[in-house]
Length: 186
Image 1 (spheres, rainbow, N blue to C red):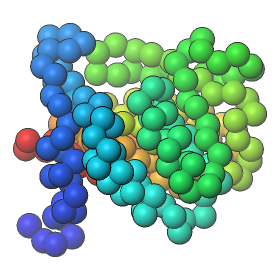
Image 2: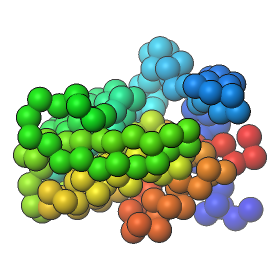
Image 3: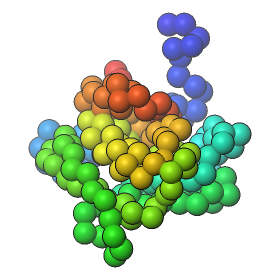
Image 4: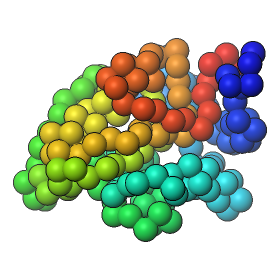
């Protein structure tokens, strides 16, 4: 493996602190639970710092976080970068005028929405979620932001589940993607 392909040194540290819950929410799914990362003050700080250091010198206008675990990390990163935050919510959760996008996920389908005034034409957005599985949520959120005129500078997640093909789909849509760690071969 070349140095360019090697995982950064923090990847194992973060991955070792993620809990795997077998057969949840349904049989056969290996759910990667990030809540242990959030519960430990040192690990949470390391995780936030990984994202803040990556994006602090990028020309960004806001951070968009995907419902619901993307809200946790996205809001903290937005605060640390002195940027606004846009919630990308599940259907029916936003009180104002919205635009919606339906997508498929590994165990069903869903719809996400954002307010029609969530961003404006030309806004440069960092899109954050907890993990990339099939890529449906990330691509749907990016489509919503693009429909409002925003540019996705990069999509980011803590975890990539490459065996589900989502990171490939996100990149094939022309969306740059950063993940802290993956479960390829783990």
